[in-house]
Every structure is written in structure tokens, then in C-alpha cells.
Amino acid sequence: MSICLPSRILEQAKGRPIRHVVSVSGGKDSTATYLLALEKTGGDFDAVFADTGNEHKETYEYVARLHERTGGPKVQTVKADFSRELARKRAYLQYGKATSRAVNPWTEERVRDVLAAGLAPSGVPFLDLCRMMGFFPRRNHAFCSRFLKRLVLHEQAHEPLINAGFHVISWQGIRAEEFRRRSCYPMWELSPDSESMTIYRPLMGWSLENVDSIHWRHDLKLNPLYGMGFSRVGCMPCIQSNKRDIRLISRLFPEHIAKIHKWERIVRTSSRSGQATFFHQDTTGSDIPADIDEVVRWSMTRRGGHQFDMLAYTAPPTSYAGGLCE
Ligand code: SF4
Image 1 (cartoon, rainbow, N blue to C red):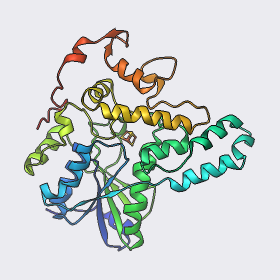
Image 2 (cartoon, helix red, strand yellow):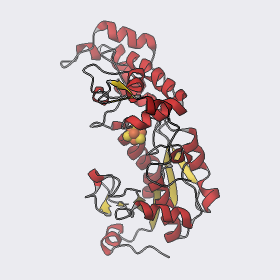
Image 3 (tube, helix red, strand yellow):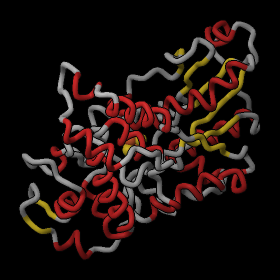
Image 4 (cartoon, rainbow, N blue to C red):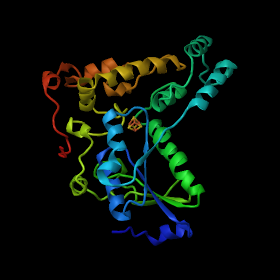
């Protein structure tokens, strides 16, 4: 099987050789995209994983071994680094720019506290990004996805190929059925990041059954996190995690809750207000921002968070919500 490129894409390529790059996250749709690329190109493509530093070890393992299990190319890992941005923030605070700015100036006290706590990079992209910003991403302002995935993939995976003379086809595993908000995305689109890159979303018309069957065809199991009951694979937790996933994380992987507890404390020490919570206050419907412990308590409740949910607390993990049990 081979891939037939639309004539307008070939025109955009202006005679440059084509290089296919598949973004892999460890989730079922991006893995299906990787498998489809394997079928269509015979393995002649690059696969890249953007490590946010907030993934589960099962995901790291799944992505690292994908090539062994499928015969496809090894997935390269790319990772954002915010050392320079943190150094700039330190200078901004040290030289009085933060306290003298016209809008929302910092107080001297907050500047002192942030400098005392230090802004040395931790090497964990998600955490360092939030320390740089002074707050966590929000559902309606998910800058994590932009800075930890889209930009880093472009800078570290696509741009070197473009600079080497290729026209890049960037494969993205988005299904219209899964993401109603993105269901109007075109299958082919010229990238906003470069005229030498085209975005390709081959799964737009795919159903869950199609995703299931390509895994079966390659005798490839899903990321084990699905089998543990998670509805989605991505950051652990994701800022968009639903109540059920938060409850599962707290029961199965309390170390990830402890990590967020620690991150909330660290990001508070880097913020202008001294406030920062991983989840938005709308998550629990509370008037005051809820820290991770509060969100976990809320995840054990039902009826708007007022009644403790015994069933949720005692039930064992269920099978994968999408019906793709391993
Ligand atoms: S998976 Fe969630 S938390 Fe992670 S980068 Fe994407 S939106 Fe942000």
C-alpha cells in the first residue's frame, strides 16, 4: 500500500522530497496513526513523542517499545527546555521590572519570596513551564499543549527536516468522532508554522472500531492504562481529566497526586499572587480555587460534590470505557 498525495500538496511541496512525521502520544488514536503510516509507507517515516514530563511510566514504556512490537521506526523523544525563560524571569524580578510595570505590578514581598525560593530549572518541562508562567494551564487556555507539544515538535522534529530541504507531512491522530470540537478540521491543511509543512489527519472519518481493528491487524495491545479504566491517555493527570479519571489516579497511582501536590506548592512560590492550583476552580464548582487534595475529595463524591460516593470509592477499576480492553 502507498500514500497518494493530493495534487495541491504536491504543488505546495514545490518539488521538495516528502518526509512523513507521525506524532505519537501513547494513546490509541496516535498509535493507530503510527500503524497506518507503517502500512502506507512501509515504515519510511519518522515518529516523534513530545515528553511533557507529566506522563505515566506505562506510557513511556509503551512508546519506547512500539518499534519492537510493530517492526516500525523507533519513536524519537523531544522535550521542551525552559532554562532560558526561567533565567529571564529571574532577571526581570531582580532588576525591578516586575514591581514597576504599569499593569498588575508585583509587590516587593512577592519578588523577594520568589527569588528566595529560586528559579533554577527542574528539567521537568511541565513544571518549568508553569513556574515560568506563574500558574497552571486552563481548559480555555491550555498553553501546555502549545508549548510542550506543538512548538517543541515543530522546533525539534519538523524544522530540522525542513531546513534539510524536505517538505514535511505531519500526521496527527485526531478523529472527528472523538473530538466533537475538532470535527470540522480538514484532513489536509497547510501548517500555520511553515509553508514547507502540511498537516495530515488521516483518522478524521475513523470510528473506534477502525482503531480497534488496526491494532488487531498488527497484533498490538493498547497502552495498559486503558485496561486499568482510563478513558484517555496523556498527562497523568491532564488539566482536562474528568472526575472518574481523577478518582482512578488517586486510587491506582497516588504518587501522581503527591507529585501534583508538590508542583502546586512549587508553582505558588513562582507566582505573582502566591496562588496556584492544578485544576481550575470550575472543576469542583467551588467559589474558591481547589487544590489537588480538595479535587480528589470531590472526585469521590456525586450529586454536585455534596454526597460521598461509596460505590466510586470501593469499586474495582472497570474495563476501558471505549470497549478496547486488552
Ligand atoms: S495532555 Fe492535558 S495537561 Fe498534558 S499537555 Fe495536553 S492538555 Fe496539557
